[in-house]
Length: 113
Length: 113
Image (cartoon, rainbow over all chains, first blue to last red; front, side):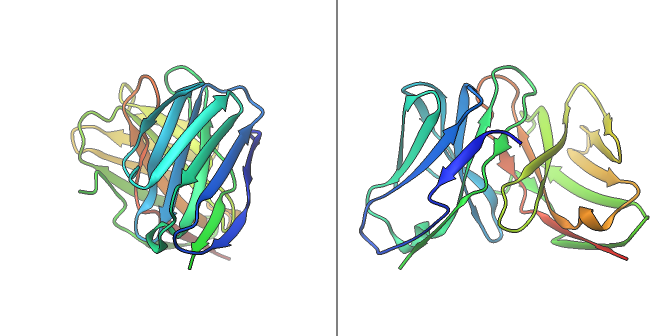
């Protein structure tokens, strides 16, 4: 299994509070990604990173920010959580090169009340 | 606008028979396709992939077929085993740089003894 750790695994918080999810990898892979999974939508890309301090937006980036200060860590922040951001969040990593599949962590279940 | 579609939310197959999961896409820029398997409370696990220069790729019991003219791919599992019961996602992206995967909604496969 790819060395990907997501923390926390579960979190319950209130609307309007800031939330930060962490993804840590031990594979030294270049690319890191954040997805959310909601019923009926599969997984949707929020943000991704192609190197330290290099990030870009995905399909559903509104309300989210990311940071990558080290190769191994990719943080996803909800500055002011809303109930629509209740979801399961997955981090993924991939190596540089064509046809390198993404490998996923086990997810963070986030509930915003 | 759903660029990747899995039109069957669920599929039930008898143990030992063939399971066929289908996926359609609309974006002609996609040239790399992947299948993932997901168990509850775990992250998606990479199964098999195919690039647009091929029309078939095999890995053990799993075979992926790509029909570029129809923008259709399928995953064949032969023979099906009880441990194959899971949700299967197809995903697509353009080759090169960061993979901005677009996922289908998933198909829940149940293998009956």
